[in-house]
Image (cartoon, rainbow, N blue to C red):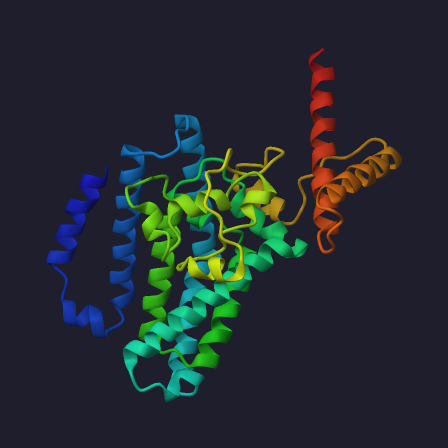
Length: 330
């Protein structure tokens, strides 16, 4: 399949008028083509040389769900958000803090570092703050991590991320072409770090950028593991702020069997996955007791009370559902 797309790409590239693409409105189309080719190249690599072995059903279900979410986000948010960022950059490119940097290469480097640091802080906030984690856990719900997992995002998280990027663009005065370049680089890095591959010298490369080895740990089912390696492009932010970890996760995804279809995942982002409990009084008492034990394990460190409560609730609901299923079978 990848060979066919490469041949088609050669035909398109042979007919491309390069000056028109670079200076005109078709630049975005060229970037889209490049990202499209990179996606299929990474897909081809992980199908030929997978680091983690999944069943064909797991792979098929994961790609169907992730691509469906990508299409939905593209129709509703993604295309709009990118065009919005470019429009904002066009209007504010000469009025920001970086306007005083004469060297364009230095300006580009500072812009990349700034947006990558912003995304690192935002990513960590999505893990630390409960109302953000509800949406971000949609991304972590994929138990079959692959290149398409990069597009497994709740649309509200996409909107919030776009708003933060827009604020940074206005503050720094990043120009339109540089915005397009940075967005392309960030998306390439996101696809690369989710690709199910392993390669020689990966740990060495991981000293500079986030590689699949580092990001796999971030998608672990264990909280002690997935609260690490928040970086998007560079890995030195994690080293600098003490969130770096180099290990292989035991399992990928979320506990309690999150939904796989698109509509259920969107509801999952709003916390609408819980079934009805028949005995509310016992339910609350059981959650309180389970949450207490979770807090005890982390030495009652403040700031995680709501997450402990939600995780305890999810565990009890899962056990209750399984018990009801056993009764129905019996």
